[in-house]
Image (cartoon, rainbow, N blue to C red; front, side, top):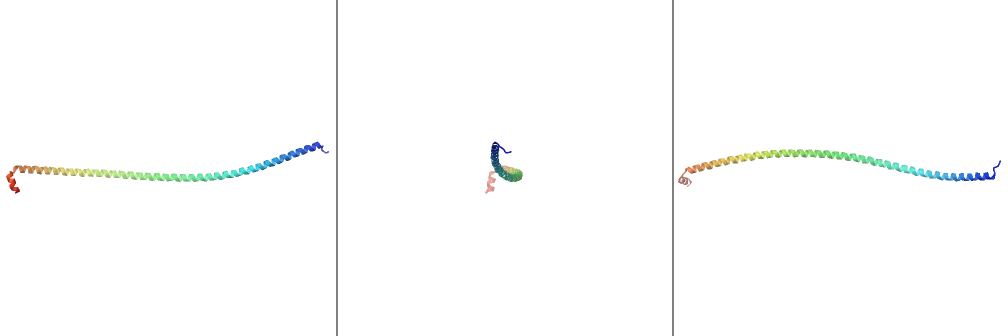
Length: 145
């Protein structure tokens, strides 16, 4: 049984449509392949960027920990210097107080010596005045000549 001409035409039309669908499918497959390649390239680039970012992040963490360590060292040194300076100030203050007490003691001793000499001189002047008051002026002038 031979197909009639209408059926042949329908078959040719269907085959033509199928060929068109196949060619469109091939174009779509090529575009999908191209898109997949682009996505793979983007994925590789993203992985490289993430790797680089991780390296920089690790370097930053390392640098930050080193800086924190340096800051701790500086803080410890500053504390030591502060304690040393405070100790020196306290020592100087104690020395100053000792010198003040020694100076006060010396001033007191000098004042006592001056007071002692003052009374001795006053006593000598009074004694001399008393003696001179008892001696006659004529006798005194004869002693001077």
